[in-house]
Length: 235
Image (cartoon, rainbow, N blue to C red):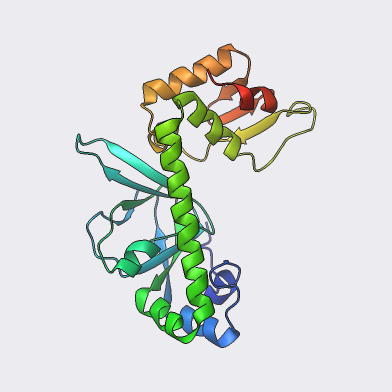
């Protein structure tokens, strides 16, 4: 397969964080950005390593995780193209609190901390966008904490399935009105960890939804037969 070749400026200017930068500002950031390839299974960094910058995913998929006190892995997030990670610890000038693993062959951009800090000093608007991005991430984490604390496993799994509704199928093969076909972005085990469920509990919930005629499961492909019915189901 021919390696993907990109121009850093072309990719960065389409990200919300850098979209409003002037061409010369974008050039300065791009000059201190390097492309990084990670093969499936490769670890980009371990928990506890110093954070020297932030990553943006161009292609591929990255898992953020850490080991629990019992030695089990806890998946914090599963990220795809256009998403970034590492900003928070970069600003705190501390060490990574999670490890980053490539779930697929990936191409990333690594932007050095110094490049970001220099632009923060030059442009107050850039600082506001950084704060906005971190605030959105905090809101996401708070919503995630609420889901884990206040919702049942069934509600968490249904919410996750419905959040994957990037494409609604309406043709004859996909089903009719009110149906939705999704493809899980990772293995069921990883998604179970992401939702703070054991694999056994995750499988039991799927089996229950299948037995009630709400979904059909074939590997990672799931057909939701009635979106509104699934939304209202609480188990």
